[in-house]
Image 1 (spheres, rainbow, N blue to C red):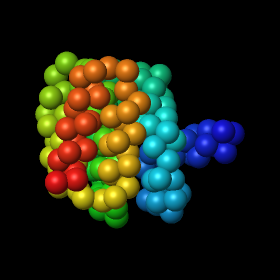
Image 2 (cartoon, rainbow, N blue to C red):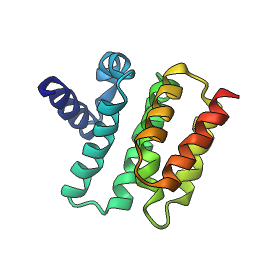
Image 3 (spheres, rainbow, N blue to C red):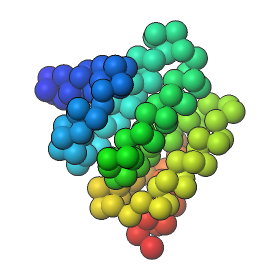
Length: 142
């Protein structure tokens, strides 16, 4: 767990320094760990809000970062967006981000994304979120 916390901390720092491309290999290696990437997205948003951003702006900033990641890995980008969707869906005024995430996920057919969608569908305590991700899994596999 200590190693995971260090990875998360380093990834958050890289996003804040706009140097995430240097962490490409780490993200590629960790893409099979839904729990770790889920925690990374939560920590990133928390870090941004603790720095003074409103939560909705933190979610928007995270989305822009994840879209930039698509320049070198659509799969990693979409995986992170999938984990971001839950945060965007709880903020009023962020329907455009939720819709954008759905479009990205619909067009990405990576196996790793399917793993994360199934994890998100199974791990949510909110029935609406579970249904959303179950539908995403169905769309991803069809």
